[in-house]
Image 1 (spheres, rainbow, N blue to C red):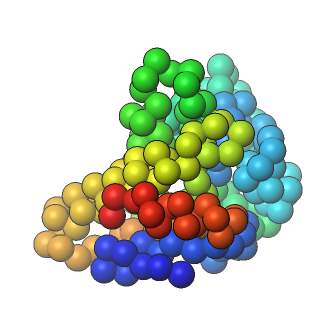
Image 2: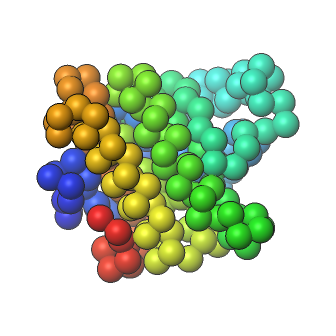
Length: 189
């Protein structure tokens, strides 16, 4: 495990569904109804409560699906995490050159939801780097810059230390050691 930003960010290899944090981030698709990869694993482990809440979000707020870059929150169901923050990453090469902006928005909006819900810890997968084809090294640079900018802006606002009840820990959880190695070489922390 590697730590950066005064220990606020931990980079590790593991299973995101077993992380003991306030919220885990789901690299969801726009339907919010489950899928493969991280999305499928979170729905399988989390159980039917997460799917029921996602269906309600689709019915009430996002009938056309969650837009790329946006984020929503549900309970964590049977997960160790109390919440799941669902965000839709960009499909590489399909957003007219806006992929980096949209990927950064995934991280920023997920972190903002965590702060809004007074959470202290959050764990992210490598959003968009699987089936959505985002090159892992490029994603590492975008994700780390978005997280760094969010946390340093928040710290600057609060005299360089997070107030009680605010976001204190961010984990970046990679499923394969090779993905972690790419991230460690290409990050912007």
